Image 1 (cartoon, rainbow, N blue to C red):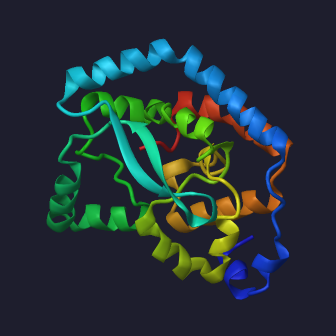
Image 2: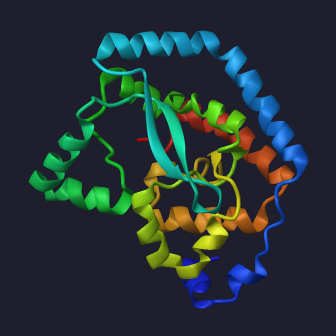
Image 3: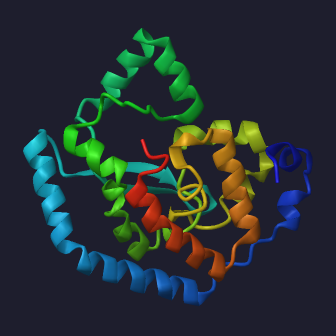
Length: 226
């Protein structure tokens, strides 16, 4: 389904009444995240040590994201950027129009100079996202769902799909999802929204298992990650 069709159909949001996730999905999320946190403890320690060794600043990075029904929650990652990343970004976007155009299209930079050496490695392999298993355990995220959007992206989402933003936020965001396994950052922002809406409309436990199975090889190949 394209964004044009979604935006032109004001009754779509009403017709797509998403049944709340079943209890088994929440049980699966708790079990999966608990096992991942326990088994990944040594890896967590190694990554934390390398981050502290490579640059000054905290090990973890916390930001606000849009969750279920648009509610804000604290989103955790391993820090992959220098502590003055925001000021670096604003300076770069003002000085380099090409990078500014790239940022406006993807909300990311392929060769982001704000990344530390270790940060570039863990970002490329998605290891920076491991702390989000804690978000899953808390109930902010599900293992599978649309990737959570930034608060500043909400305005653009509304411009693209209007009131159907309620459909997009009708399920919990996920640690992985259809966008993560379909090109990730190589896709435009509009394509990402279309994929996320497609997931919401076709959600099933089987689809979740398929997306989880696709996530590991995508991480290894680092396809579309930047």
